[in-house]
Image 1 (spheres, helix red, strand yellow):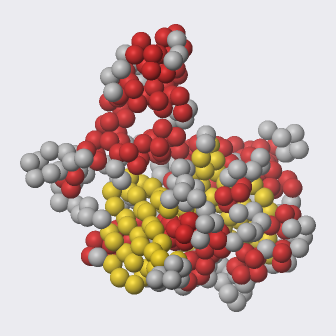
Image 2 (spheres, helix red, strand yellow):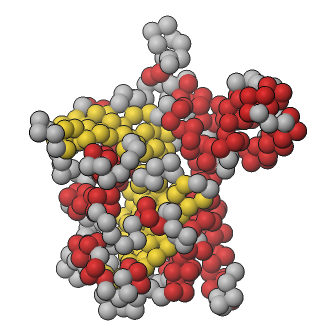
Image 3 (cartoon, rainbow, N blue to C red):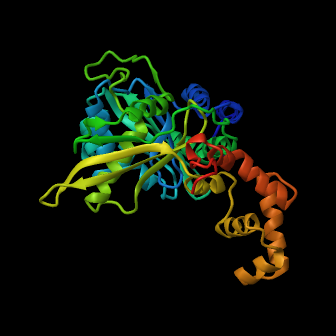
Length: 396
């Protein structure tokens, strides 16, 4: 605990982390964390977003307090600026920064108009400053938080930025715990057909298949909006059914950024369905016009395959790259000597690694390790009725 914090601050800080750790869902975690955080860092509006730790894309759940819009163009523009423009305190930059929290006015030396985000969003919404914090643990970011203060109020100060940064790892670890929880068993007859959607370059839905509407409702189910409390012009209201979920906005904009060579990799985000608890993958690609310029955007939402959720599972258990390798070899049935030979390490070192893996996953044998990973995360996919071939055998 920082020596400059008084007893009251320390008590509120401890209470916030206690309630966050006890939350039964990420949505509940965001709700209680926001309530307690206001006692530490007063603010007038906020946005809370769970993220895919492998890609940093916003997924679900999300929570907006006095800063959400009925207009999908506004949400699309917000994430478009996040991925396609250079600005201060971008989430992706804070995710790699030594300190994972920063305030807009402090970063611009009290010249916020240097920020495009301030001119296009923060100020029109009636706010004067923004404090961002990335919730990170291990090698990934598990959440983004943006706190906003009304115009005319004091800017976020150094002490408040320090407080926000101190919450990064413990809140990320609380979120990560939920990735370890087993998914609900699949119910025969539930629809699992991929949802296919085509969006215009500015994010307007052009066409989709029947399954897409069900998927959009399912992943939208964890977007929570508090009623707007600000009366100033430009304050945004709660989203309606026409507004795509946050995971869609983020994935589409990532696809655009990749097509324009602003980002590398693939536009793919994974999340746990707020309805079924199953892992879902949302991926997008940017199509090309005849002249070669980026055009419409294609997006698919579908159940995640085991290989797609594996990176999140190993991050959830805090397995190092070497521990991941050893876990995979154990799952394949390799003995200690075989693992040592393949990885060119001593058998004693391998045994030390296995002991550490057991402690992290909470098991005491190889069989328990494989059973835990399979039963809690892979079996629901393996026995999905939609993943059975004509003979009733699990598909590829």
